[in-house]
Image (cartoon, rainbow, N blue to C red; front, side):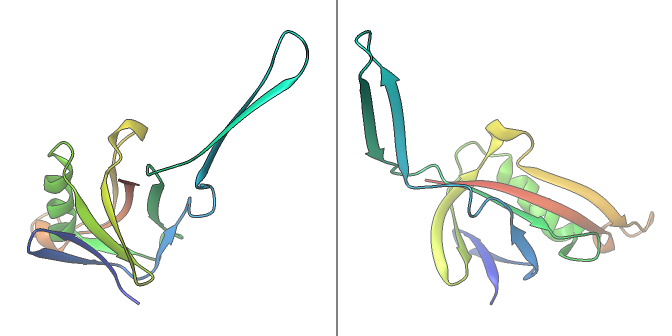
Length: 132
């Protein structure tokens, strides 16, 4: 199954071997518990309406290589505050924005570097999104 990211009429097909690192770390329920001065507990719960983090990263140095041309597009998209895109992963579409408040939203490390042909370089890229 392919992983796609769509903005307007441009579709990027991301590497299939990305790992959704924080998929199981998020739950759709928010809860707080506080003790009153009498010792009883007040529990407040609510359904989360968005904000799920989606971090896509390579499993290791041999997976999810990305050409510089795709990286450049992602970096240009991330340079616009609040840009909404559609991320489809495992046949489920989600509206996402880049997650800038959690470090760099697009982290790239060169894996194959040709000094004279920049568009043929390959990178390991971690992408940080937030569902809205």
